[in-house]
Structures are given as structure tokens and as C-alpha cells.
Length: 544
Image (cartoon, rainbow, N blue to C red; front, side, top):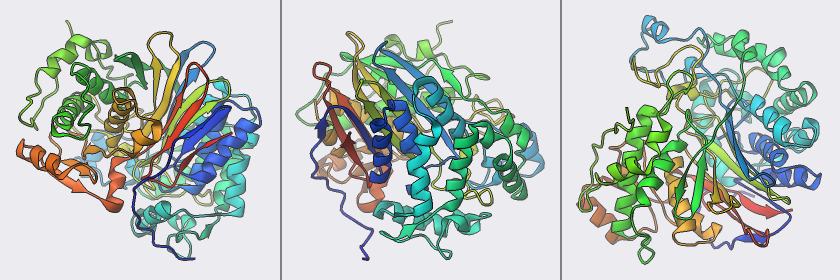
């Protein structure tokens, strides 16, 4: 059947409620893969990797093993949160000096081979399972391998973005045809097979992460990048490692919100929540002018800081304790004018003397994995290592080319990263409250803050919290225009405009700008999970 891929995003879903384990993500076939891991006795970590791999098959428009990943893991026994940084680094041969010699110091084209950083997802998957999993990698990847070999029907929203990629980077990049059908994107409901990706997953399952970063796959990655004008080589790949980092957090009301530290931008969500905590909750007008103005202004201040301080902590550590202090939040809060927008906020001085899929899993024991995996811009560069069925990310586009900037490109350095998972725990006792995230570039910390406020201040269930209309400062800068989603009252739009906000009303398929989130709440008394999945995508939350 041929269905129109353009659709109304109104959701009439109820939250999914139950116990025994739950998976939520943007693609039902990937949810099923995660549930299969739980059914086999796996942990939330096992299920997260199974889901991520299936998403690489069914939603390659957003994610893949040629990209990066981050995870937050909540251990129900210890009530501890651990943070995995599965992001890659710039090649050792790539530098600002090289770009200057090549005439690229003014800016890298978005899909240039120099934007390919080492793909960190494969190592991230393996490291997450090694620390928090129970199942063998072969069993975890089996559903994704089956989907890639036998084929799957492409979902409508995915088909829409696949079409954009087919007209964009896949049409120009080496071997991009491996992800097309006779040179075009698959249509909604059309079956798509990816034997190359199945081969990649089988190789990883048999040989572990070394089989990805050394040997045939590594040689193919290096070859396609170098043929396209890049410098990444097999030694860069062989040297890659994930890191386990100390998660960052702040309190908001009676809860603690957790994020991964820089080089991820989760700091922006925490800074905004710290600022907003100083205002009384306004439940009577959740989409009213006063509340949205405060939230937008708090995000402007947060972005003013994070666009400077978020960088590779190995080379440019941010003053996190000072940035996240309540005293600094009070200083920044005082800069908000309740009557006018301030679109030229500057970063503060906090020191006392810096395209994607999201999934969440809660297993039957109460462990939770908040997990995100991305190619960056849709299919990334569109470059496909010949015969392996996945594209390489363009995450290096996130580097600054300004010498002296904390996020300036340098050999072996990790770039500013937009992808971020989140967790919320009860401050008294440390029990899990929510595992959640909102994917979508610079929308992610904005979505984290808005959904957290919906859950905490307004006590909405996960589905209602995700359904509520959002705002987005669309370029992630302090002075960016504000997209406002359909559903926000016209009067609010008009009043925000009068206050000086550059307002962009947004509806239809363009609403993907506001991200696609997933939420699982866990009742600390009963162990019952409440799940929600974003109506702006094709996915769902499902029970074991």
C-alpha cells in the first residue's frame, strides 16, 4: 500500500503501564529487539545495545555503528549512576594547520571527509555490556542481524528522512548506494535489506570490538575516508578507547537530574534547571508567556556558557563545580528581564579563583539504561565503507576552527557533542524516578529541561510530558531565533514576539525540530513502570 508520509503529529496515546521491564524508542522493531534481550535474562544494558543495533538497521537516517554513543546506567542495587562516553576523537593527522594549508580554515563543509571522527559506537556497545551486561554479544545482536538479512518494512517518518538523505549526502558519497534501492530511498512500508550491515554485526559478534577497530572493517573505513580526501587511518582506529566518566548532576526541587559530563552538552540542561529552580512553579499556564519566556531565557544563558565551556575535558576541563553551583545559578538568574528578551547573553565567569536516536530501558530488577547513538547529521557524511552497510558520522563538524577556543580542532581530540542521555533520581534515598531523553541536535538539552519540568513541576505522566508542545532555540546559541510548536497559544506567540523574541511558528513535519523523546518512570513503592514515546516519531514504549 502507498500511504502519505506526511502526517498529523497529534497524539492520543495513553502511557504504557506495567512491571517486569520496559523498552521505549523511536522504532517498534527496535523495541522488540530490546524486549528479546530482557526476555533472555539480559539487563537494561543488554537490551539497550540490542535496541541500538536494531535501530541502526531500521533507522539508519539517524544512527549507526559508524557514529558515537553515550549512556547513563542506574544500578538498582547500589543506586549508583555510571556514565559511558563512547565518542570518538579526531584523527592524529588532522589539525588547524592542515586545514589552513588546504584553504579550509574558514569552515569545513558539513559532509567533508575531515568531519569523520573515529566511530565510537562499536566500542561503546561492547564496553557497556562488559561492565553492566549478562548476555553474549552474539545473542544481543541476533535480532538486528535477522532484520538486516531478511529485511524490514520502512516506517513513514524514517522514509521521509531517508528521502532527504538520498537526495543529499548518499547521492554524492562513496558507496552511498548501499543504503538505497536503485538509487532512491525506500518508500513507506517498502522492505529494505542490508546484508552489508548484517556482515558487520556478525563480525563484531564473533571478534568483539577488536574486529571493528582492526582488520577488514578498519581497513575499509580508512580507505573510504582517505579516498574522499580525509586523513583518518587504521592506526587512529586501533588506538580508540571509550571512557567511563563521573556523571554530573544537580538538584531540581526534590529530585536529582543526571547527565554525562563534557564533551557532551548535558551541562546546558543542568544549568537551565538550576536557573529555573529559583522561580515558583507556574502550573496554571504551562504554555503561557511568562513561563515560556523564563524557560527560553534560562536556555539562552545556559547555551552562552556551554558553547564555550563544553569541550574535550582532557585538554580543556570545564570548571564544573562552579558552573553547577546554586550561587552561580542565582547570578545568572538575575540577568533575566521578566519583560524583555535578551538575545545577546554572554558567557559567565563561574570560577572562584567550559541527528540521533534515543532509547531507554528499565529491566525487571529496576536497573535503567539511558542510551543515545548518533551519526550526527542524518546519514552523517554519507560515506560507506565498501561492503559493510553503514555510514560514517560527521561529528567533527562540531569542532570550532577558532584558534584558542576550548573546542578548537586538534589531533586526537573529542569535539563538542550534542547527543546526551539523562536520568532523574529521588534526592531522598537515590531511587530511580525516570530514565529519559530527547534526541535532536541542540534541541536535546532544551528537551531535557522542558520534559523534566513537565514531569516534576506539573506531575504529568510520561506520554503527556512528551506530547506537550515545545520551544527550540534552533541553533543552540544565546541569540538564536525561537521555534514554537503548534499547540502553543497564538496569544503567547504574539506576546513573546512583542518582548523581543524572534518567533518562528512551526507545524507539520517540521516539528521534528523539537526532538523525539522517550520516557520511562518507575514507581519507587510498587516497581511499576510508566512509559511514553514521542508522537513526533514512529516509535512506542512496550512491556516485557
